[in-house]
Length: 288
Image 1: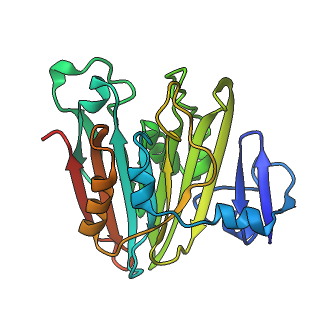
Image 2: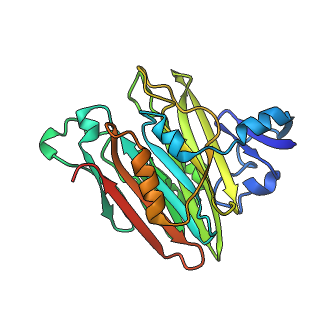
């Protein structure tokens, strides 16, 4: 199969069906604005099968002691709900000293014990905000950057071009972000990762992935780290293809149960009715 490759020094975006998936008519990317020539590339069946392998999310989580922070976006098994999930983990006392709290239509992190908070700069933020029919989910204060940029009429990708990976060398934690759009009975989403160049802080690698009319019962999963190590290795590759449960409580329990018991901190799950825009939210905190 042939894919259209849109790339410039700011990032890359792969589209199966051509430019229409990346058109400015959607809120995700604008290939005609600031991007270089379009080139077609071919991939072998073996490469395609490897990249398109559906993962078991329970196994993905239970087999990885420290994926860091993670975003899942997809569509419920019955096709009626747009689904978003976000979790945080921690190895240090400062990172583990957090809870999720509802904040308007979104959520924010807060210190569970304020007396133990040492550095709020990368751990206190709003992971979820809602802008009209768009729900933004990120692992840092780039939630506000995406919200403000899109409120000004910029695309999701354009809004994030001003941000870099987190300044926490030698890890240089990637900034992972997602946005869901539910409008007129239709659902689309995009995911982004901004990371250092294989651990080199002098380079910025930017990737945006768009998913139009996602299939029922399927979603994508992206997380900050490949596994636990020192320094922590950044996520590699395309967001992982996973199955999405029909029931919000069943899916919440599946995720929380399989996150590492020592390192998990908080989990947010939201199911949005694609027909009406109404939503249900579940929040689980280890600190209670």
